[in-house]
Image 1 (cartoon, rainbow, N blue to C red):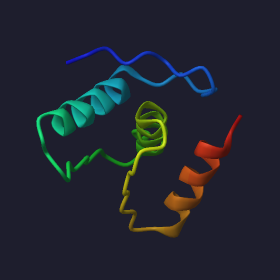
Image 2 (image 1 turned 60 degrees about the horizontal axis):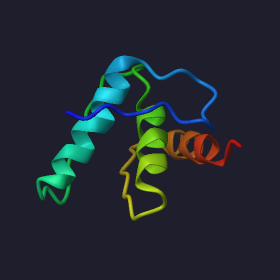
Image 3 (image 1 turned 120 degrees about the vertical axis):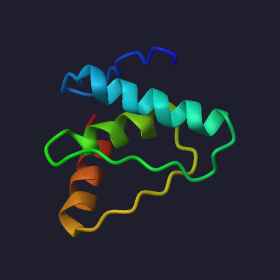
Length: 82
């Protein structure tokens, strides 16, 4: 898997497994997987993973399915931080 560089606009320091998750999603997409699925336990920073992924994809289409409205609100706030 390729190494993911830390983003300059993210104030939190992502954990190594969060970088690995982003790398795995990008690798799956590169292999032609059209709808990769990411499952992580509660409290592991899925919002951070998606913020990293959005930043790496530079605005290209990304669909995220969240079961709770609170998650989508957190994702919006994570993307909007300068």
